[in-house]
Figure 1 (cartoon, helix red, strand yellow):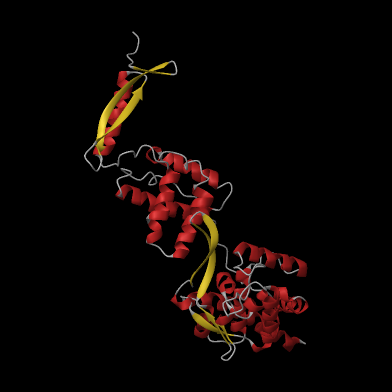
Figure 2 (cartoon, one colour; figure 1 turned 60 degrees about the horizontal axis):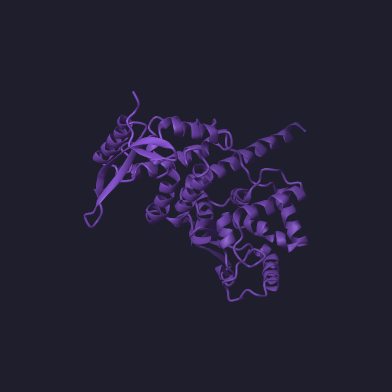
Length: 378
């Protein structure tokens, strides 16, 4: 017996049924069409859709994709509730791990735990378990919103198994050695373009804080650096641009002394910046460590510049801008600066963070002290 159909398109026959799924603001009915190879199949699709609306889902919920829904939520809902640094992290995780995943183009209503699990398993081939777990946190926040906004009946994430984090190795001191610090100083003396790294070794600023410094943030009368802002690159209105914001926490707002011994190099660096940026107004707002055009340096570009210098000088691989900050804290410890004062200089919100670095230094110093006992056997 042939299947009953009532609609033809491009030589194929279907059964079409319609239903009122809601009303517009002016009371006009919203009608939706459902198609199937037969009457039973079309009516089954209709009934499933109407059941979803009855259970609280919004009209057209079956069409929106994860990528479209997530991007709209992030830009128009969640962005208004969080601080810029959090938005930057969310946007980055979306761009790198969600927008490029296998579930990005799926209809939101169709996504099941198995789909998310498969996407995570694929990501594990190219990124770390830590990044996947953070991506899951981001997706969980988004899905929770979808459930609350009646876009989903329930979360598809509850049955997803996350990858285990690797066993944490014993923390080590990532600071540069005294010889490596001396190498950086000599490199800056030979070529002032390397001075930013020397400046960081003796100020302990975070990369974003360092790259956001303006000339007016230096107070040569008091000999202090005024740390109150940072810069990050983020997608804003569809374009990637430098975004300046307040520092990480209240504890990060601080004054850091300028070491007298680097003031000569600092003055030379400032002179070089002034001479190289003829088109940039020298009104105190010019950046201390700018790009070639006088704008904010991008973090990864700044890091690559440092790594090239390390390779040139033969400094151990694996060091980052944060290693310079770690070096500053290590020097404070070796010089006997009290833990509380070091924590304030570092801008740590928790003194235990500083204490971990001090603990490494203390162990090293104790070993050297015990080695001196060998003199009794000479």
